[in-house]
Amino acid sequence: MTDVLAKLECVAWRYISWPVLLCDFTSQGYRMADIARALNVPPSTLDNWKNGHEPRYSHGEALLLLHSRLLGAEHTRNRIKGFRDQALMRSSAPATKGERTHAESRRESRRAG
Image (tube, rainbow, N blue to C red; front, side, top):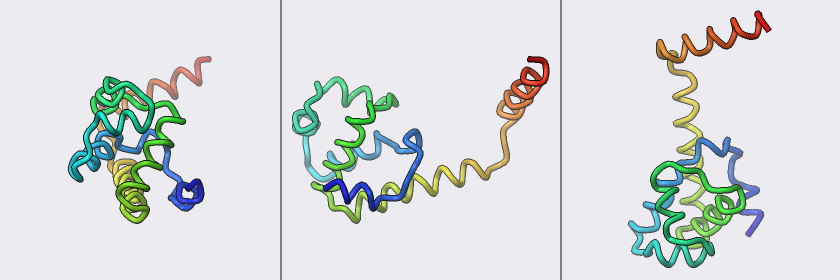
């Protein structure tokens, strides 16, 4: 099973949309209580992930492996490819004013420090 993850494209962990992966399970009829039991985490942990918190690496890896096992390796690969593509699109989009201001203040603080 680990070679399934090895074959998945490398994606920065923060770009994986954990809520989307969890929705995949429910859309296929799996209950969150069963997913929590399979991952050996309390159901409240899944709620946290659905609300934007990131899982620890080991839990995230386990969730990806479970996703691959239950929904198919191809589906998981396509999801991760989609997350990567979205991240690339966001990174190539013009920066917002707030992002430019933040980047400028970081550059200035580096010069001063």
